[in-house]
Image 1 (spheres, rainbow, N blue to C red):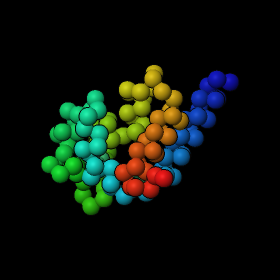
Image 2 (cartoon, rainbow, N blue to C red):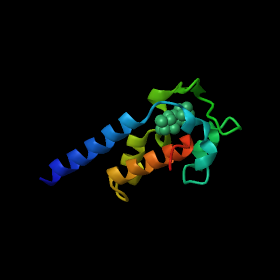
Image 3 (cartoon, helix red, strand yellow):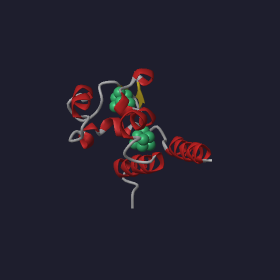
Image 4 (tube, rainbow, N blue to C red):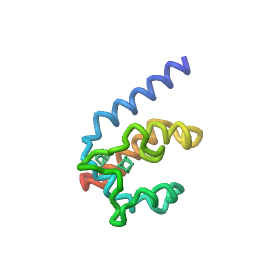
Length: 106
Ligand code: SF4
Ligand code: SF4
């Protein structure tokens, strides 16, 4: 029963985010907004100097299949955050940050 509830929770958040992201690439142009986080050392290596990522080509990631864990919400959650926060809460936070970056958050 508990397993079924967890599967449902995981599917809900994953589906929610995959429907939400419009692949605008803006989060890859605003690396400076997460520089103060525990992922600073990774972010600094990606930053071309103006806050945009050196691997961004157009609006898309040119190393998508091997992108760092910090760029992969699913992996980031599993490897660093699953013991701290629920998956739904984490994806709600990701969506909130995305809306801030895109300037659509009211
Ligand atoms: S800013 Fe939001 S919508 Fe745009 S690519 Fe990033 S996660 Fe997707
Ligand atoms: S590595 Fe890819 S996903 Fe990560 S910030 Fe750069 S362009 Fe975006």
